[in-house]
Length: 156
Image 1: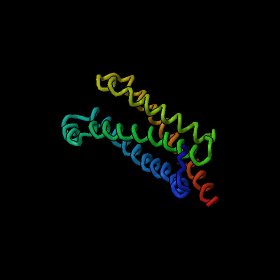
Image 2: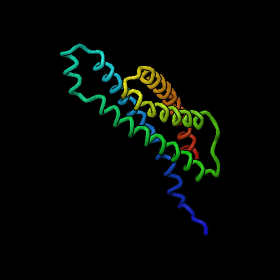
Image 3: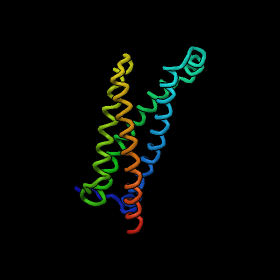
Image 4: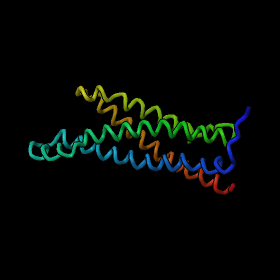
């Protein structure tokens, strides 16, 4: 028994991944902002620090990071699944490879949380470095993703 996906769903499903990833790009920028606020809180003097602590930037960063991790992994898998369903294959190129790299980077970055919570600076610096690389790849993904969407639209 074979299950056939309706053509209209196949066509429009191609736009779910790009939309999700653009939302995640914005969320990643917000996570960066929160991370900077955590750093400011950690290094601030007493009066300023008291005020910054009220912002609970560490809690917000951890929560946003968790959402980002989950949605990025699911978005990556979803993008590959939709490509395979619509084309019968994956296109191995810079977009796919950078996306797989991003998925690996965010997983390793998130795995450093227990070490950062214990105050290990090496984990903080590694986390920051990985996430800077992740944002760089994310920018590349945005450019190559728009090119892919343009190719899909030109075939419609």
